[in-house]
Length: 199
Image (cartoon, rainbow, N blue to C red):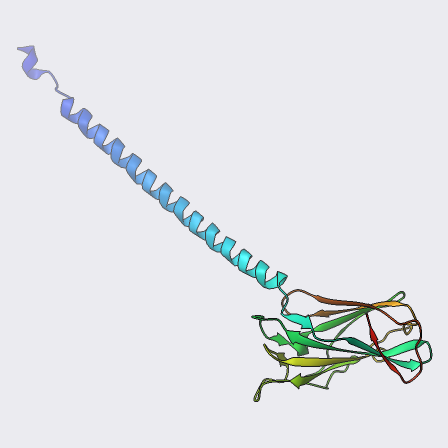
């Protein structure tokens, strides 16, 4: 007779197990959603870093032709002229935002362009488009174009003009991308009013 009043908990135990199982599934789903979101975020950031690194490491500028120095006095150089072109597939370079750095044995000077458009530089250097597409934007060095860069070392605030056999270096720093270095050595003789290709 007592068996009639005895509790049968078989069904209740099954219900408890189902509730626990549902709780585990919900927690696992939330955790997996968080982990997948973090993974997608990390992947996206990695792609951005790679693209930025490639952009910064690759240069859009290349030298075109010789570097020419002009001697303003016997034994010293006062002007430097060279040509730049855009690399194949390179992005356009805004020359108004470029920075030139000049280095020799006793000088290290960096100058912004300080102007807007060709031949308007106020810090000792200018650029001029010599090969360009019709209707091009004057300050952008684009694919297939060639620009001449003229540097007046006195206006560039170089304290001592470079002399014979002195090593000089000019770096063109575009607003985005790698720096273009041009390292040269002056010839063993400089006659006033003459121009020389340097190597």
